[in-house]
Image (tube, rainbow, N blue to C red; front, side):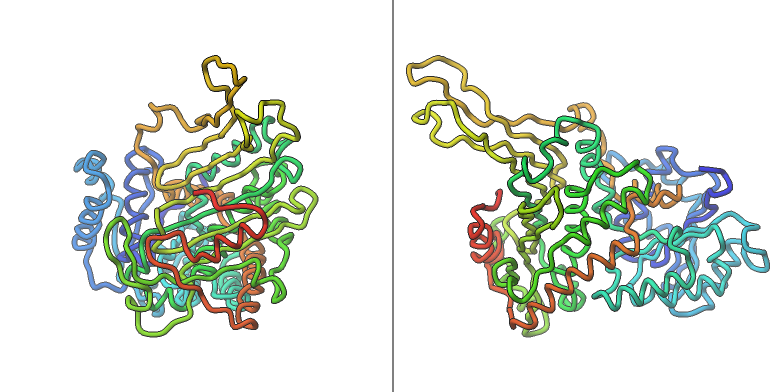
Length: 494
């Protein structure tokens, strides 16, 4: 990256919030310690809290010591990192704090481009994105080299998404807008690109002729964790499927891009989103299952139901299972099953790919009554690994003939590498924002195409009066989700 595009400052607006303290500052602390940050980069926290710099630094240090494992926290490293950190009191909806921010950054009275670029990271409620953008522009912090990063949700539906994107576009051109989906910063998600496009082994089979089904599961054991009001307006379909899960689907399903250039990759993801068959009123009952958790037990501990945790009656779904179909040559007829929920039996994020079975088994049926097909399991959490399940001969001899069993070929990193500190996904994303590399960020047309598909499901549910089905906390969701896959001859991988 040319030196002229190196930012002089990273401003975290909402700098005292949970995301900033739990993810962003620990990520920056590690990037600084590993030598990835430019020596002259300043990091400014901006929030409504009435704090001075010392009080803000004390708060950051306290949270770092909480969220960073003790063996990775070093007092000398912290002191060095703290030298580049400052604080400005600024309310996102008010202009006066941004004038103070511009003064601290040396922008007051200077022409755009005469000072190093500023990256503004919005770690705030989405309703503040529009006012913040306008205040950044008024304060001279939206110059030709300045950039902005925003967190999900990008709207509540297609209409609100487009309105929000228009607010951003009025201040920052698309190439300087970075829409964050932290799943794309995970090592295993990025390794999916290497697995697919750096190995000729898989490409001839990566299609409807070689793959029978794909499953993507994002399961959480936690409930809404004090976010009931927000979650009750959002639900699992908008909160998880619209962004994280559709992004994972795109990486699995997209055609090989011409290069790793940002637009080349995102062009292919957009084609997948536009190829998703709409889920209409006619098939929503067969292809979707909304659910809502009730009281139960998670990890041996009794927990309340969703309604007991909240503020009364609600039809918000805390679980979604659905079948997605991609209408193109590569994937015609291959079901993509998506499943996500809160208060489930285990914390798990996984991509499961089942290849088609051999056309004819030559092995004795009495010893091998069922010959399982090969499977690729890409796990993102709680641990990150990739496993290929293959058939192998059982060692030994016998009169019954050759016996086979399924064995796992581990494609993860070496034990030495796995023993290293596992990087926070935000480390990769923050570094790319600072470098101006948008490859792992979501483009405007992507997010709008995703919302268009999700809106069709929401409208179908509304037209059918489809309510979430109950499931006990600590299970894998409503029984209807099992029936969803079995209806098409499959079952969930658990």
